[in-house]
Image (cartoon, rainbow, N blue to C red; front, side, top):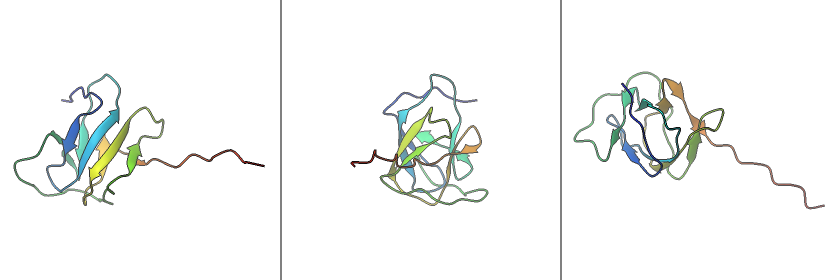
Amino acid sequence: MGQIYKPGTKLSSTVCKTQIMALRVPAQELIISCGGAPMQIGDPPELGEMQGENSGTLVGKRYTDADETMEFLCTRGGEGTVSVEGYVIDIKAAKKLPSSD
């Protein structure tokens, strides 16, 4: 069962030190996970074990889905990989600037 998140919500991993802040999220119930376990609002009481393959998160980077309908800012890096509804979200690619010819 998912939860509806608002922009500005701070989420913490329950399996590593990763923390993210929701910048843009759809107004629907979502299951946001890190390291294979659901994330919690605020700070977790204790850390569990990670599941599956994890590539980690980098502090200061923005993470988004392929359609850019949601965006998260990593405020504390960690070993887990963030996913929404089972789909891994990646670092947001930089947009090309127009030529100044």
